[in-house]
Length: 111
Length: 113
Image 1 (cartoon, each protein chain N blue to C red):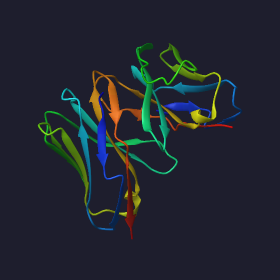
Image 2: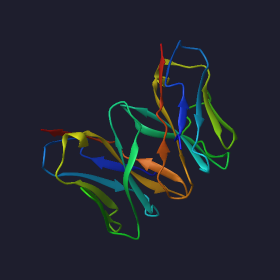
Image 3: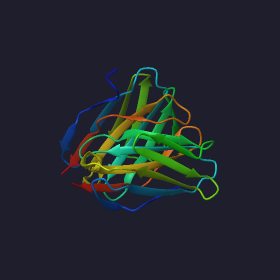
Image 4: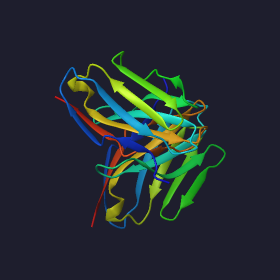
């Protein structure tokens, strides 16, 4: 069935360093790839997304890249700050409306 | 805009009891989704609706789970009878439909003892 694999499951970085989270999807028809940030005890919140007609998108310190041929997409966070600490989920669209989520990456940024 | 509103925020119930979770989507959003989040299985899609019609319920774990959307501003997820393994955070989300990001509600943390 359709699935999204996400790596790593945990990631620890020093404040100011970069963090990269990678996802692989299985459905070649997927055309929308959002990323969500979930702080402890809170709801997942959309932080950035990319569509299949674009290879890269940037918003301040976060960027997402997409390789449709390899069915890979990645989240890049530069100049990490302690408030970036959270669980990050990637997702890929399935059909017209559904999103399938990755298993999440727990990012810890140490001051 | 109050966002997606879920109630209750927390629910503790005894095994065998009926549980009803409620969701009010963002006004104007055509699609509504129910997800379950656990440490072991992550975010699982249970069921989703387009224009109040159930489109895909393949994620509903078993017949004890049912969901309804009687109108565009309200949906329920019911578990009857509840079991301890149903303990999880249940999120409702809505979107404008099509390939767009969802807005999640605050979730209902369900504990079945």
